[in-house]
Amino acid sequence: MMSELGRETVSAYAAAKGGLKMLTRNIASEYGSANIQCNGIGPGYIATPQTAPLRELQEDGSRHPFDQFIIAKTPAARWGNPEDLMGPAVFLASDASDFVNGHILYVDGGILAYIGKQPE
Image (cartoon, rainbow, N blue to C red; front, top):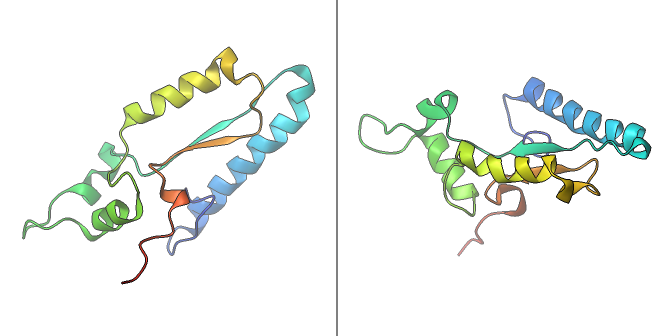
């Protein structure tokens, strides 16, 4: 996500993600003629132990502000689950993806495709 979108406080993280995206494309370019594909999976916001504090209810019973932000910005209206990444990983590891090279497959619930609701 952060290789595609800007957000405050995550500059170093975003730079690392952008570097991985370009490394993927360069490896694909360099080794494609040897029938070696290099692709990546770009997970959206995934419910993991690391993100649990952002998803826990506040003391007053309300959602964490970042949780509200993610739900509002994601057309799927939820955090992803680790299981959501399994199908794309199997596809990229299979012969079905032999002509897919240098691609980042975003598994993000549509967040990169969504500009937000139109103001009323």
